[in-house]
Length: 348
Image (cartoon, rainbow, N blue to C red; front, side, top):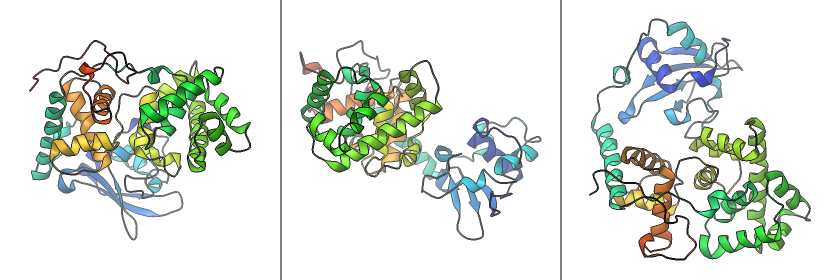
């Protein structure tokens, strides 16, 4: 098996090589053979691996991951001899310098619709008016408090339920700053449920189990992202992680929206597809789309508009969850305080 750093091979590179020289025949570590080809069904580039029965469909978002967007195991494409990386190394020499337009076909009706979807979300963002820099106190809290924030806020009212508990906990436990501090405190109780009830005034055993498992998950990520401090390690993880990595957490009830909010808390410029963001995108398109599609569209539209993705998310949340415009608020705790604002070009 070729010593090939998979992180240096992008979906686009392998897709282009497959279009020129495919299909490829690769083998998994346990000997399963796959016929691999590059296709573009409904305007969406995809790499498909076909074993004896069934198929593994890999999109750009889940490229290189052990599980695809559809939850299908894809490790066999990457870990065998020859792997898809080995095949690429043997066939890429004559590929030359291709542009994206070279190997992605002209837009059909479906891809044109996807382009107009992004344009519609861009217009919806512009209608929000000014997107202010997000400067909520929650972004500045210690890692231990951020994890509590993330887990407690799942399907709960942030201002009435989460913020008072965060403030009380921080006052009662000022020395609990790191993830390990929090883990040790939780383990000092008879159970995670006892910790949640006594330290956070919240009786929910399943939510307590989620909190402990998420803390342990992040501690593991800190160890795999070495840096000068825990905050820096978590920032590196948050920026490196991808939305579909939420499958790797393996905690029931902690899905895509919770995972994305956790990334936001630790500094990633992204969005969480909660009910407010999904409704915002649905309203812009005048139809329902999946959470992962809403996330992708909002990220791309915010970048095209020239504003921060996290700041756009916060603005949407502010207006939907609190039902007031920020310009009308004074002297209240906010997730977006009155800071210098972005100037959105081409405001409608």
